[in-house]
Image: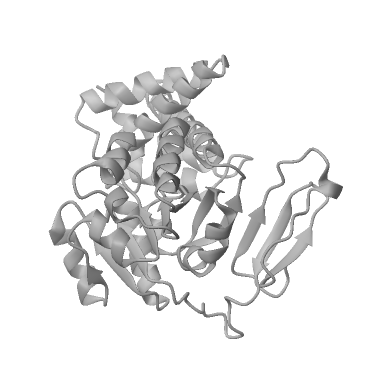
Length: 344
């Protein structure tokens, strides 16, 4: 529906059952288009110049965590002209970004104190909590008005806890986990799922456009974590099923390449299927998304299902296969290495 910005869309999802009355006033700089679905698509009209380049926010940006996803995000923030201060648990990972123009923070607390908006992207709930609550953690640098954005894929309970402690110090909190991979992160083509303080979401418009192709605002804090876990549950289960199909083809004397060729001509054809399967057939399991992380996401999704009294038998079965792959030392390989759980 947004014709004058083909590169990026925001989607502000209504939490109301009455779409006609769900519109809320938002910043004047946002162009609003109401859709029949009851959601609202909003485009940041003033953050994209006529030539398509992004006008970076003048706010100081901090970024904590330079792993597979964080590295690509920071690189794109810098490319688009943002002022970024970085920190990583292993400091050597910061060197490349310092060369690209980033500033170095000595501790998470220092980064949060120096910057207006601080992002974090780490591996799991424990790492996310430690980053905020641990020694020299983010919480020590939070002052009234400071913004903290949690991009890690964690459970909603962790998000609720972090939101409460940040806001208790007068800070502003947003969760913004991302759907994608290392390659999509490098390409600035992530999908951002945001929830929490909507004014923070709006303040981060240029950041989100630098790192992604689309963002969704999902309402109150915790909703993005729930949606992200569901998405990764589906992706992880699907990847395990594809690996099962490839190995069954081999076990029954069928060509795995022909199986893939047929699959990619049908309704399940996708770049994801093609790339993952080709990598499997080539024995290339270089991580684009760590196997240990998708297993963590499956575990958290199953737990979320338990709390909602909702069955997740497919995810539970897939989780066991990923656990088997981890036992075969595949944790730090790509999620497609789940294939090896079937051949050992």
